Amino acid sequence: MITYVLAILAGLAIYQEFNLFLIRKKVRGPVKMMKGANSFFKKRGKKAVLLIHGFTSTPHEFKELAAYLARKNITVYAPLLPGHGTTPERLAVTKYYQWIEAVDEALAMLTQDYNEIYVIGNSFGGNLALLAANKSKKIKGIITLGAPIFFRNDRINRFFVIPLLKRIKIFQKKKYSKDAERINRTRKRIHYSAIPLRSLTHLFKIVSLTKKYLPKIKTPLLIMETDDDEIISNESGLFILDHVRSKDKRLVRIPKSYHVFILDVYAKQAFKEIVHFMEKKR
Image 1 (cartoon, rainbow, N blue to C red):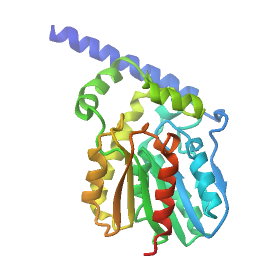
Image 2: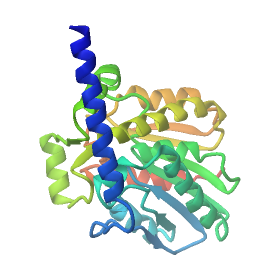
Image 3: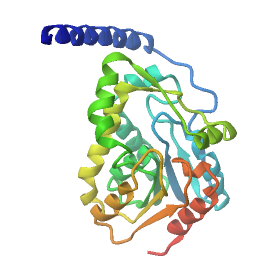
Image 4: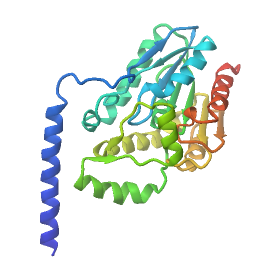
């Protein structure tokens, strides 16, 4: 029986490696970008904001927030992260450190022209924002929007369900609640409809690095998340709040909304909280 099981596992491993070989071959060279997934830069005042989008998403999710900030005479830059805005196959061969490097490059560009920079990250973009907190003295604040430290059903998914699925398939089609479907439809979200399961290993790596890095952060911090988030556990915000060394830190809960709450009914409330944080005299 054990021999039979081991033979099946070995067969699945060979099958996976063959599929990954085909994916790597497919993504060589230029890949067509999804319409509307491109980076954008709105130059306004001397205060600049770096916007980091979520996993499998694109800068498009920041369009409304970016317009709001621009009206406040705040410069905004939203880069497209590696592996995103093209095809799930491209994301499947992207490594976690490439996302960190992309944020570093974006910050290096902004620090050339701006002395007051804020970093806003949505979902796992919030983790990348936290990891960038000490990259420059010009960073005056970090704002996380539903940054994951703990996911819903975290242990069973991370240590059982996902490892099992990774052995039998490369991609997993996303499943959404009715509220999420409504937002995806009405906001015309530009994102992948399937997740490369291999990429989740790199997502979890970013989360793990965030946990270790939190005690090093002294930068002013605004942590935002929605009540009863369907993707992350509300323990996440409290964990960040309790483990950073920032003296200026605050946790704000947005009334029950979709995980990407900057696209839901209380988006304007979130926008006002963000601007208030940035305008606060320190």
